[in-house]
Picture 1 (cartoon, rainbow, N blue to C red):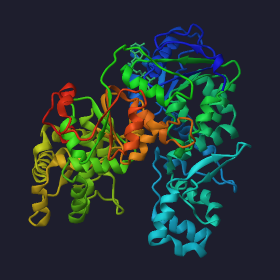
Picture 2 (tube, helix red, strand yellow):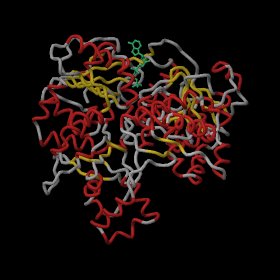
Picture 3 (spheres, protein in one colour):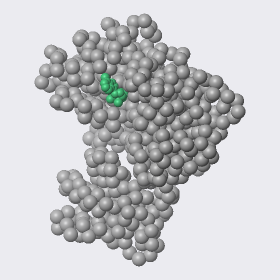
Picture 4 (cartoon, rainbow, N blue to C red):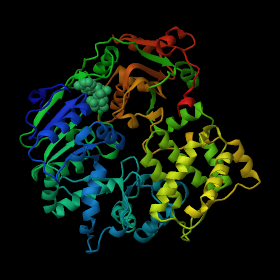
Length: 612
Ligand SMILES: Nc1ncnc2c1ncn2[C@@H]1O[C@H](COP(=O)(O)OP(=O)(O)OP(=O)(O)O)[C@@H](O)[C@H]1O
């Protein structure tokens, strides 16, 4: 990587010449997304290469980021296609051209007439059974019990790799060892899904790449439709994505990639930060932004310390010293939250999803157990209420389209082609389904259901659907006497909503990966193990392993207050932290040192529960 070639810019700068390829490197809070949004507007307003049917493609890493960019595009919005890379390739390559893909026998690879989006790969037992049964019958004994779980877990991590020749193949990460014989037929395993029109997220890049390689004329079409293609968070690009982007550059699109190598945290999904660092297309211009507009000086000093080996030491644009970074040794995590939770705009970040679940359940009634109990008592009704609860959780975040799509699941027919219980009646048409879903969701939200029992919500829905019986043609089963009635009277609807998992969870306790691109006034970084303090004591952001970069991303989400919560602190680590010449304050327990609490939040009586 040659940084001497980089030109320093600021996030407020506008490029005069936007018809060349570029790469922007900048640290957290530098204004990359801010700059990109303005750059897109500038291109839309002034480019002579855009015509009535062409658009700027602006690729973001998550749907949430796409929504944020869209909201800031103003009047340019119609000339820009903002989406994630998967949605972009699905819409522009796979959906229209999947019929061009054939297997080695010349048969169509995917049942195109059945394709309906792309989904997470959750291996099904039936597929594993028929795959091993057909291709490795001698290994059939492996699919049961613990071995079966291992196979399923390994397959859920199947990713596409690329050979230097450009040929793609499927593999699972090294830690998931499977018998070598199985490796030869991963493709056949995947075919079982494709033949049902089911495409997994990871297949989207592979199919797009194959379609474009086998039909190069489509590259010309795509470049004509998208003369400009800009990609945010490119440090997490996947090699197949990089190859496609370079092919599109050759066919005429102007490519811009933006990112921060120190924030590359998706190697487990095949991301290669070197692809960003070494990104080269002829006549590419390299830019760098050295500002940090998000955080206070004290937080930025910690970030610069972690980043000292690599490029980009950041300057604090806010010019505020701010509060010290605080390391808190917790005994009971609940105490920390009870005492430190600020009024608003905070987030607790954890390394793993299981910690999110654990932390949520320490601060809530055990909502997950409630769902388990629900399932055992009335399986079908549990499925109905799960979809409803997820939909309501989305609606609370004003993500109404997600809410609607979630609730529409309840109108899907069962194996006998009938409406699933507890609904009764005719399967509504797609249009009527949408209309019923909107009315039901509005009705439930109007009920202000969070302090109501599940029983009361069900009664109200029962009456609502009965009153509209002529219009909708569907009804809800009443809750009869018995154990389930008792359960439904004892469970608050709010507990059900708190226990659901959203696709892109925007709760106040999230994994660090889900906080990518976000910022909060106060950030708590929860370490479940003291050894993770090593990312502060001996930072190594260039390491092959993502771990130190993951914590760097976590710390860099904080605008004003950063708390690092550790379960223990050895005397050596205590001394080392103190000796770092960083303004870090250490608290052995919050009760002992509570005088600083009012500075943060005027000690509030709210617990995290109030924020779900
Ligand atoms: N030129 C600017 N003027 C005013 N505010 C700005 C400017 N540039 C960025 N900001 C603000 O600074 C904050 C950080 O910007 P942004 O989220 O774009 O940074 P980023 O580089 O994408 O961060 P990260 O990589 O950490 O996600 C945001 O609140 C943004 O609105």
